[in-house]
Image (cartoon, rainbow, N blue to C red; front, side, top):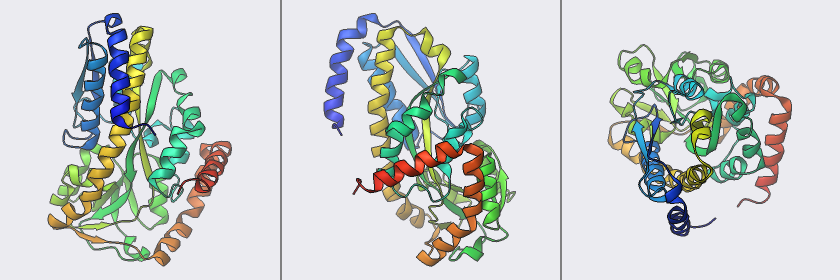
Length: 334
């Protein structure tokens, strides 16, 4: 992998050559997360890179904290051409391209290195290539991270402790059914509504990567975190096809190049943030537990029927292709 500094130098040279071809324009990016989240930091990095390459002519304007809607509504806005970019969770794109669903199959991806190899390789590229016909352009996968469960009722030390909890989940049947198999009442809810729902005890908790849990200050309304690592979660950097088609070939090259470096920057940033997040959550009063290996195995067994069902629903070809690629990667990634 090329270093960020080398990529930056290359992008600056490309920008100098093509900046004169850029027009004055503002690209609006809406996200559901707040301005302190690593995702927002990476959007600003993307904007800086694009501004450099275009000689200051292309500006990225960030709208955080769900100002412009949630993942689903902002993706629809991209299709309609009323918003330029957003960065939704892959699970919310299943209604457009079913193949995205297999990425979230429980306990499928085991490490960040596996995720990078899978999503940057032929498997990820093949899925992104299906987006243009849906009015969307996929510019790469960003990391959200492994998802973990928080709640305000009790520490979770074994599989049976999940029983009876009412947790907010991503509005996606796979997530609802996965938690149902765990004995949880999964409540689908857009992300911008989650904090309030936990504060009012409408739900007992939620599930998200530790970076989101910390940046969203969920520790203010949640007491317990279990590092369940039940699903790996990725985002897609999306641009409206209408916006993309309005760009010149040179401008498209600028966007693509900036997106490539921003992807590397985002992953590095969120992983550094996540590495410190657990300690920060403890400092803010959360009890953090981990499931013993035997309990993880029991949890995996509980959700296996869900994995089988949704592998069929999302497409057995995509599910088989992903598993074959992961098997190959596990033989090469150390």
